[in-house]
Length: 166
Image 1: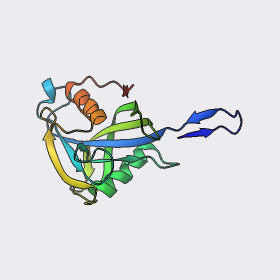
Image 2: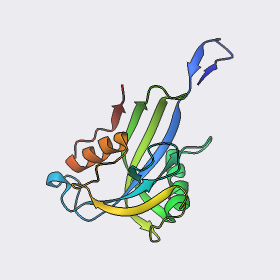
Image 3: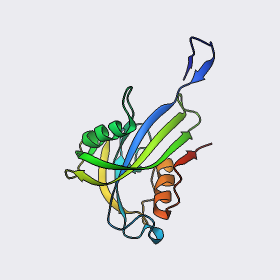
Image 4: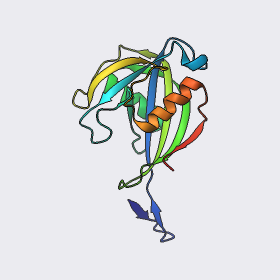
């Protein structure tokens, strides 16, 4: 999808922004192999994108006039029923998945170790399961660009700005 700039007449592409949060417990990031750290993941279903793959427990598109932090607070409440999530910035990712109508994306990834409420499935039509996994023993079927981030967290090698799919 592209838009035409009304001032210059140039055709510009659209970028879709999204925000993600990985709820973490136990261990310490940076420990060898992420030993002892667990991450909460959801099993996607009926979404039309990477169904039957594990992904961040809460994530979604950033709405107009909404910051990434506001978006993830909203998504965490809507998708897993938690509030007052204390966010730590992990990385921003510019990514593409060629062949989609809108294939340019900018994702903001956060981690959290503090929140209010017990995480639970709130959108059963889109989430088949919600489960804690050891960061050093993730399931095979993880959304690829999220696997990149999770591996970087595990290995303590995640840069503040990343790219995927280029």
